[in-house]
Image 1: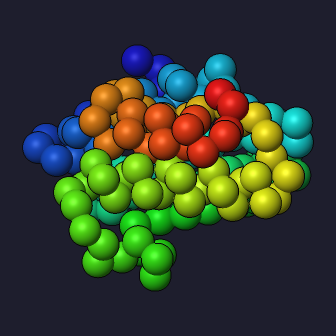
Image 2 (image 1 turned 120 degrees about the vertical axis):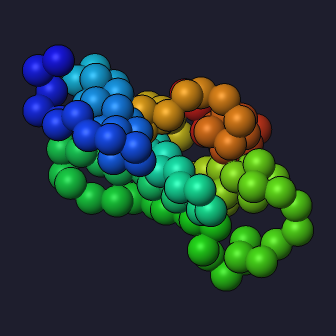
Length: 127
């Protein structure tokens, strides 16, 4: 593995494995002004989604479970991820973005990641 991430023990090993997977995904995915990158960051408690133009290096839209409209909301973490997906799609459409490239951040496309992506698709973003 020539990705430059050191192997460690316990939680550090999991973080290193996640970083390796994210580097592997990012080799093939890049955001452009026509199709920016929808980045999903998942922690144990929160979800953050950003729409990024990699060429300009600007964040065009973002949403998080820490936003006032979502924070302390009803439902489990998957329901909150759906709210984040709908909110980031709404903000991206307001910024003039119609289509994005999905960057799952090295996470499996299941559970909260899939819920966020499905909600963004239902809100009108094209992947």
